[in-house]
Length: 107
Image 1: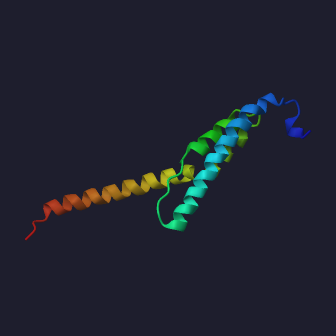
Image 2: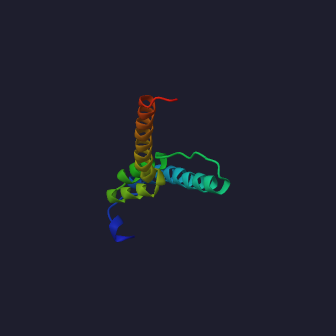
Image 3: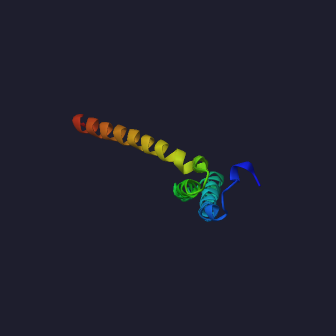
């Protein structure tokens, strides 16, 4: 038996294994969707954040809670802030451009 598992019963790991397996499935599907999108040039939607949240929950329920950083494997966790910031900047630019277009008279 591994030293870090001493005194830990298998029942403590059941929820971790079940939820973690589902989480890894969603993380894998996200990467497959991302690769297919790049390969075909068409957008293919995955399941952003679901895999990462499930992995976090699975390892948070395990006896070794620090493993919950594994949720960072889901690229949706990293892409969400990037996309939100990028869209906020684009919307700000569009609103500035629209307001400047209204102020300039067209001939």
